[in-house]
Length: 410
Ligand code: PHE
Image 1 (cartoon, rainbow, N blue to C red):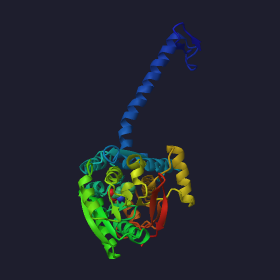
Image 2: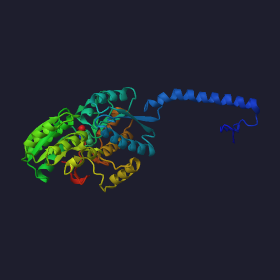
Image 3: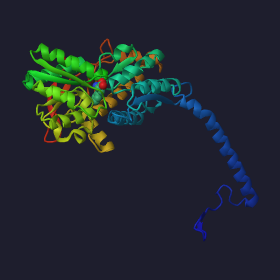
Image 4: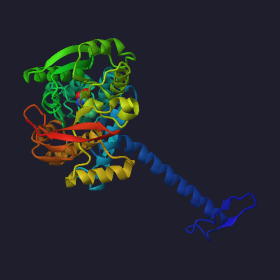
């Protein structure tokens, strides 16, 4: 190989053509170009067939993911995506499903329920996905589920906890616990462990998750002899919570239950402290985000929330997941990543067991899931396609989030 004065590398003739002279070399070039165009043509014919995924002749299985990669609760979608992506990599590295690779097709619903229904319709009709992973937020799973159900495409929500989600139909599953359990656990913790008797509630009024969790909490807190002294509401994205917090302050609560999402919770905490409210704030899994403390800061000190996963667990299956995830993303996984990972692995497991790769066959295997060893706990589906799992209560202390207690399933 020689260098010309302009610095370009001039390659010697291809060894196959060397010695056949100038004319032969040119003929060889023409021949190799026509082979190349034939290959390109062939690929153009074959590729669309391959992108039909599990369809005849395809060597890939296309799985759809819909999540909030942008918008108000972008952390939910992004972190869940990391867990899903890691699972897909591991599944493919160990031979895929029935010898075929999984290909993930991800759609961003911008943290909006209507958009969730739209992108799921697209994943089903255009991308012909075999199954769907999503969503985190219950309102968005509720909006998308009827589309999956009508098309008989199994859908697994990693983390939507509102009871109504899986009641949308027999193709709708989840791998997390439900809000009746979660609400009751938070009430029990507030009443029995923290010893509070007067609770105020500040709920996100247009969010199915928030309204449901507030009600389940209130029911159990009162059943245990506590009183709900104020019940206020806001709408996601509000900037000013002072009116509601002032009303709450004058009701003199021992604890304030905020069943909302991390972004609003952070702001509410700051404004509550500005108003001189010092009692603990408590909440559910919606507080979970790598940015909770970045938003709420010191205002969240001394607060508690319930969650699905404890990354400090010494269980081998958890420790192994935490190690692999941390290596890949440079950050320990939280509940969202763990549940995204479990939903994906559980789906692959069911697909491997299914006699054929069709929606109904995969649905039947998912419904029959028993004792699946997830990183977020063991998963056995009940007759409504919900698992029964333990819950953890986390505490925020000295600017850190750590395990306070584990509550077994009831
Ligand atoms: N459970 C919440 C809902 O149903 C979503 C969520 C799960 C958020 C886990 C954070 C962590 O809306």
